[in-house]
Length: 336
Image (spheres, rainbow, N blue to C red):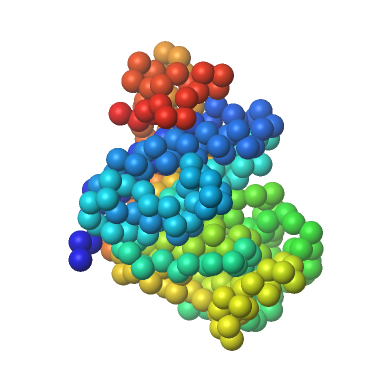
């Protein structure tokens, strides 16, 4: 079997750069669908010529809509290695549309059959910490007990912990419990992949991610958490009777099993890449300057080595397709 090699890391950065450059044109326009659609088209075009036989496990769109990076679509030029891919061309479409920070483009990759397929599961309960607290967490325990354990592992008072939580009605009780024990809450409207990255990387100002978010995002997140040596526990949390019935039919008695980053990413090696679209705590967004060009800031992590690389790139206008939103062409080459 051909294993993915290190050069794929830079290839994946080019993919997320392409999506970020396309999406950034729509920052603050209020049109999240246009920004997401442009990013999907650009990412799909960038994936097309990579040397790999890729299958999309986590994607976008429906199977009958070929241009949409649907789950099961084949990408790459068909040559080895055979790999599984999870993509989110715009993680935080609302953030992008509203001109808010922390919108990113992300991709994760493993060897074939190295990535858990979530099937009909749409939502999961999540708990993410950095490597110092990975042995302290237990998602079955109340939030207060987990926070006390995490605080002890980090050698600090609970009152000094900051917890990333999505600002959703379903989290009202969770937020109350976090504050009751004395910890701080960082409420964000969207973007729990970025939130999990902050929780898994020491020194970002976020110590923990808690709450219910998207299952596809959990699988993408797991690639980064595994590479970083962090701790992650998740559990399917259907948000409707229909979703519950589908999840039970797909996974049987194990539908509510507690899974870790190593269950979601079973491969020994994994790649994770992200490019900022709008400015955030970890990644700068796409910046446009007619004289200097367009700058992007990306991060790429490999599980095999644990190396985190930050890549700042300057893209010259003369080498890019026209970036005016009115003239954007989905098949244009964005990165040389």
